[in-house]
View 1 (tube, protein in one colour):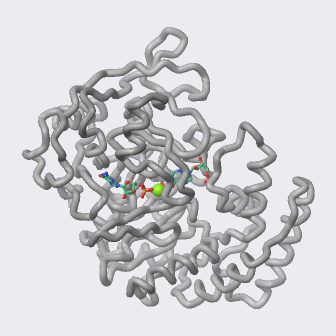
View 2: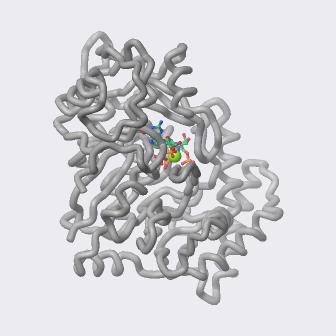
View 3: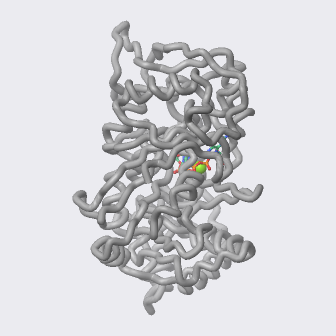
Length: 423
Ligand code: GDP
Ligand code: IMO
Ligand code: MG
């Protein structure tokens, strides 16, 4: 058996949480492979909305197994809140949440370092979620990090002290006042919570399960344009958000990867700083933000909105090896007389379909205009019932990318889908 992968093709918030929840009945295991509590994955059913940060989006489907992979960074203080919120909903994960012993921990001082580093950057700040993601991955690659497997060893406290002392020295350099306060207490309570779950060498588990024909869906966080190597560096996150990140973040060999499901919004959003060629600063942008409720699931910040960017989408499809596309939020376009799609960039007077070294250099997006539709599509469940204008839009994207759109989402609820995502 091969594991399928689902990941975001834009700047995050494409609707991964919702779609993983929709696809979970077709799988036995959902495995998060990178990122941490910078992610906010929303799920909606029975008129209730849930936001998950570290925990895979398969948890609301009974009996499904969930893994937090080695590529994820965990903040115990946030993890405990998530688990307790789920318990209040009657979701007991004791026997069905597995955590990799090799996943790294975000320490309270990592959050402080994130805040200090962002403050020091001034106007060129990344717009980080300030969850300590960058500093935690820095300690991972710098070979200083603490891992989940460390918390059940006798020398953990000593290791914790050594690392936090190192952080305190660094924070002094930033002239940042170190005061973990209540957060540290909660963090240690979170460690107790983590110890209640199955701490495993998840790479063995995953490969054994595949050997035993168990079906697995790997869930990404963030999006391809936030990838540490291929995103709009330095305005990116600190992990590989692409398919390669799923391999390293779970211990999967390339031959073990099956379908690669790339998810994109019918338009584009970005939260935080950094270039965004198709960004709208007019009433259309305001329309998308209001109608699409484009406010961050983790930070509440307003998301920047713009038209679909095909050069960026094709780039993401290439890097990930996407085998099928999933489109979300075309319902948000309802009511626009016309809407636009960027098909090429014009750079120094020349048209190109490729992304240049830096998207911060002057880029003029070349647009194609599409006719909109006015009738509400959020209740539609059959492809044939969609407006012709949306069918044309989908066909255009398929022609431009060469990849079929197998699922269309028309609302935030888990029922609001058209198609089966090829599963
Ligand atoms: P994620 O980070 O990729 O999981 O996405 P987020 O949860 O951060 O943001 C997606 C937002 O859009 C959430 O508020 C979802 O409830 C909502 N959403 C998902 N799919 C659709 C859709 O097809 N239509 C509409 N209108 N909202 C959607
Ligand atoms: P999900 O999984 C959207 C953005 C931040 C910032 C940059 C770096 O919900 O799609 P970080 O906290 O990683 O140092 O922030 O990346 N960012 C996201 N934007 N969705 C996310 O996750 C994001 N996670 C990080 O806004 O610009
Ligand atoms: Mg999100």
